[in-house]
Length: 142
Image 1 (cartoon, helix red, strand yellow):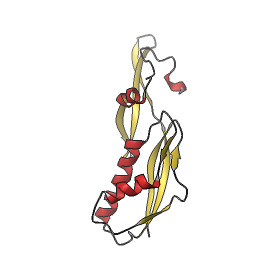
Image 2: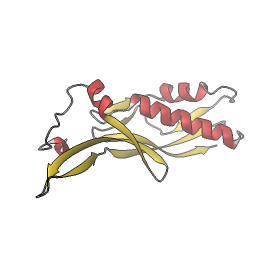
Image 3: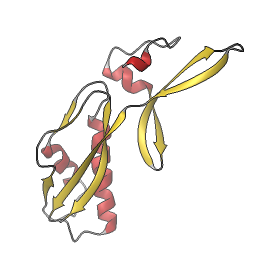
Image 4: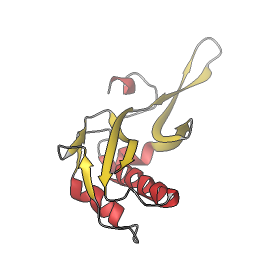
């Protein structure tokens, strides 16, 4: 994480808990993500310059069989459940893996849905590398 070097007054965290405490919520065009804010004094007038060090998105699309007849409200709940799972499990500090059973459990927790099967992605677990965070892509219902 070269973005952390030479920033006055900022020491990189030594644990995931320490890192997560530094994250601030931000969004761009309605897509939420987490950022680290740092500031330093530079220039002749010692103006404060702020820098956001944000991880890159690791887009993940899903195809879910058996839920083609659910309402748009239930589809929104499925998307929210998967997004919440990503926020709870993922960390940009290291490679993160999420199992199919984790995704199925998040969807099942909504309640009132018919039985379903997650058919895509086709290989599990899904992973995001260090410096990346899972972002929900297109969810297709078949």
